[in-house]
Length: 312
Image (cartoon, rainbow, N blue to C red):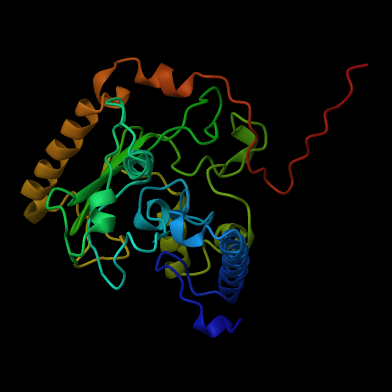
């Protein structure tokens, strides 16, 4: 790939290393596209292609700094392609907000099956089958996202995660960081990590991560981009997407956004209470989310060894 044509998120410093890393990620996307094509070809050979609802999506943003395990668009927004010939009118641009929690009720609706009341997601089958463009359902003008423990990658006895909740509208993104005292991507001090050797454990290891850490003091740009990815964050973050689509400048403390911030906080809390989110409805939320046994591992610092000295 031509590295000069690679478009980087604005939260990354200019670097050929990062461009090359993103190009490798694009190659994986191309490989997945080929896998999808083979699946569609198989459906066609079985004469099922035109009668099959096909949905392709992702589970989070790319596993790079300030992407996966974050609630910015780079971490929470995922691609989604839907194909259902004869059912979904093509050639439209629709701006309704949908969530992956909406997939299950949508599939049930497509199959003509009842949707359990316990599901918090809502079917968007009518949006898919509508002939309208733009905002089809006026109420779908926002989406809610959240994060709890990904890897127990804090320091010392702290085995918790970095709980966050967010509301995203057409113009604003508001994020509530419930534990601003914790490292949002895990501690950079792997020697002190709760999970032995875990190094910035909520961010997968790779060339971009290593480059940003090793060059964090190279210049002002590198210092800023490192902090955006790995430094601790305030309790509230607010981004004006009309002015700052890359979500780099937190305006939560600016007076002119005070009323907007208050309204978004009110909307976010109302949704969390409605859906019985323990972060707003249960004083034991910390125990519910952080104290369960962790069975996975985490990204280790390159110098860390799992070998233990024999006690014999």
